[in-house]
Amino acid sequence: MKRIVLTGYRGTGKTEIGKVVAGRLGIAFIDTDTLIEAKTGRSIPTIFHEDGEERFRAVEREVIAALPAQDALISTGGGVVVDPENMEHLRRESVLVLLVADIDTIEQRLLKKPRPPLTGMPLHEEIAEMMDRRRQHYYAAADLCFDTSETSVDVAAENLIRILQKGTTTAQQRETGMAFFRTGRIPAPQLHTLESILTAPARDPQTRLMGVAGYPCAHSKSPALFNNLFTRYALNYHYTWFEDPEADEIMRVARSLDVKGLSVTIPFKQDIIKYLDEVDEHAAQQIGAVNTVVFACGSAVGHNTDWIGVRKPLVSLRGANAVLLGAGGAAAGAAYALADLDMKVTILNRTTENAKILAEKFGCAWGRLEDMDRIRPDLIVNATPLGMHPDDHSPLRDDQLTKEMTVFDLVYTPPETPLIEQARRIGCRTITGTEMFIEQAREQFYLFFGIDVPPETMRETVL
Image 1 (cartoon, rainbow, N blue to C red):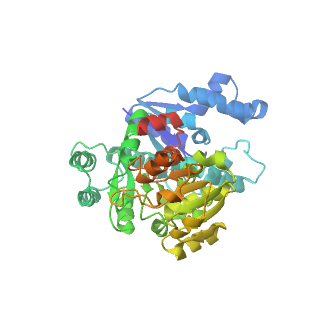
Image 2 (cartoon, rainbow, N blue to C red):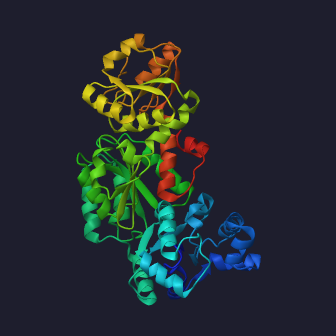
Image 3 (cartoon, rainbow, N blue to C red):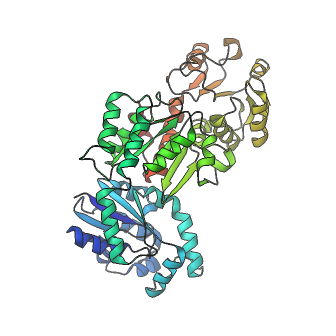
């Protein structure tokens, strides 16, 4: 049978519950910490004390890579999820179950089985600190999430087996979800795939859904990219389109179907925030726009990876004089990226009040689109939807471009937009939206699954 991997902080019951589940399913139980001790001939605390954490993690990586591929239940160490290489090995042809418990429960359990502290903090504070530090990684490692706080080992094992065998959604939820997908513009073959996942008698209850949320979003390349990556990394997921004019309806369906994650596109990058339980403190709170939602353990957490997709192709232009076209959610991520590269930025938008609001947030200049006539920047970034069907025209005139400029169009469908064609004709250096799409999707995949996909793999998959 498919391999089961238990992850989570120490004291959440991975060993005790894992042994019972493995016994009832008739499969091998394997504890990675036990394997590490057998391999080194030393206890985990001794390895940490004598060799340090870096050496321990190296041995742990070797042990993870050598685990059997099936017919086993694997109990992992609390920090295993932080390493992308571990995640790539653990996720292949496996279902990952994140065990969680409240801090007081974990503290009481650890006091009964004392191990050397990981920090110099009191135990309660250490648990809170380490769990918070690793939370993003734990969420990425959660195909299923199971709370062990107030349950016995036997009951927890019974409930976990039931979830593994029946899934987390009801027949009614799946029928309602299927009705939602039929209202969108999903091609017939993809609808048939969704029916087999959600409503077929022989459906796999462990298959999880993900998708791109927008209106419209049928043009998105994300389903093809992610589904190809799922095949490459042997992940039991399917990525589709969540197309609806109302963000709250998309979120309702996503929560009901226990969706793993959403990529958020126009026009919901700002509106979606009100439907989330929290947003990433680094980017999403400062940018005020979300393009990535990770669902785990009953929470919907918003992140922004757009800014990373904009920043990486522009590192060589640090300190440049830049014009940013647009003032929506995509523009917010772009403005954050340009400011992070110490650029002098002017935001131009058809609605100048929106340009002013965004500019004041990031300390930029602002104006109307017509003000482009008096500006000769080093860099132009298009964060408007102009160039995407049906608005398939350039936001600029030929005389507003010079061959000394770099033009970056964030629109990636089509890959050769009217603005990119125009800029190349004039002799500008151009960066297509595909570059931004690759980098932001790569970061999304890491947030969703903890796997660090090489850039060349992303490029091969997209192109």
